View (cartoon, rainbow, N blue to C red):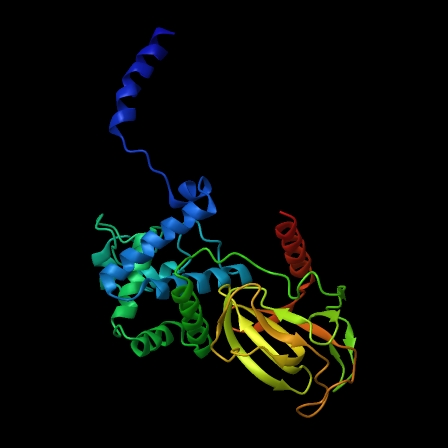
Length: 335
């Protein structure tokens, strides 16, 4: 017993000498959503200070990559505050025999991209500051105006759609000046007459056999249609199937599709930034024909959701989301 006591007494000083390491994942697990946003914003602002690129571009890239992680099985869930993903080969260099290398000099010799962003002498792929600094330096190498940044994004992602989504996200963050854009809204006002059920995957015959990629919300002509999310109008106009329709891209890379409108709300144009609950159009029965065709079916809103994974985009059932947003709107109304 006395031996154990002696060992314990010897170990006590070490508790004050040896540093205790907490990973970003450990820290994040104990934080509220608001605190996580504060941590992320601090990282974005530091990247802005070192690169002279506005913080909302880093927020946009981070949001885009977080959306990719949610949409794909081949990407791990981020452990820290930043979702930007590098493979070990990209970070350390494809020919580097040490795939876990965190020495900035040897990483550079082997053609890796990893940099030391916080001055601790390591280029650590698991360190949020190092990852964000590395990406910021890539962008800064092309310049700091909007067109330069677009070129830098294209060089990194080699995909026009990625550039479009990220620059759209950046405009949303710039307008609202916050990372807390979690709010959603149901697609029509609760005090109007409407009904809906899950219709995703049902068969459709007009224009050829196809499945129904959305949920139909039946309502009277002229019922306001609201944006369900923060986002940017990516598309507006006529489609022979959807009639007068609006497409909005949110900051999670999800495309929200509103079809069969009778008309658009004034001021809704391609590039317009919207927020949850904002009226974007009105229920109608347009579609199934040439521009202006109306009345081939009862008035309703066709609402669809499509997820982008960095390569392709596919539809998924919006009904669970609509039900959740409807319930949240009812709770707000009752409080």
